[in-house]
Length: 221
Image (tube, rainbow, N blue to C red; front, side, top):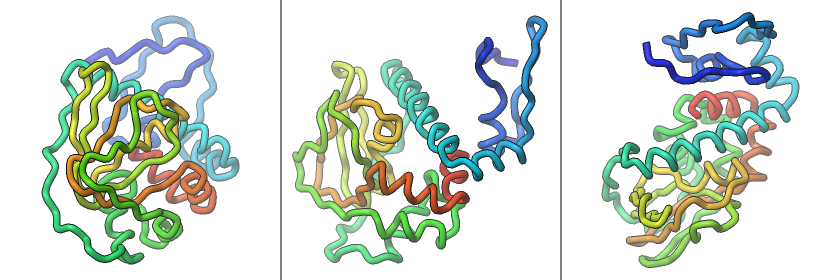
């Protein structure tokens, strides 16, 4: 019964529940006479599979929207995050199996097959930081993100209105990267940090090569 928003031409409505496979969906009601193009779920997915630019544009647009929502909720103190959990420090370099397990822990790739994640896992670059290292500054150009394997990163932006900490099994920096946005906060390591770093080009190459992976990611977003 909550009114989320009103949609005017030429914008679309109803696609997000389809992509998210949301069983509840939305109630959409015409307030005026409406002329529209209706697109079924199968046709939508076929279009994404036949034309990768549509899928890429969808990921970028969703990323920009999520970044804006996160910024607004953080400023209001309404975005709750779990307290970082301490994990053992990985002394040895992560092998492919460990990378695959990490990528499938929660997040956007939970339901993706291991086969579809293999290329993404191989392309990721393992990075290690000491306490007090700055990953980026608020307003920097965003060109990479990271899956945190171990450690804690403190983030602060909007003149102190946004303050949060991220730990193991969290992802950081990808929303701005995929959306082509500047960083919305300063990120500094609180502890030793180990992570898997991914860049935009490698990510979209992997999605173009594996449609299932791309749809899993969009559905999560």
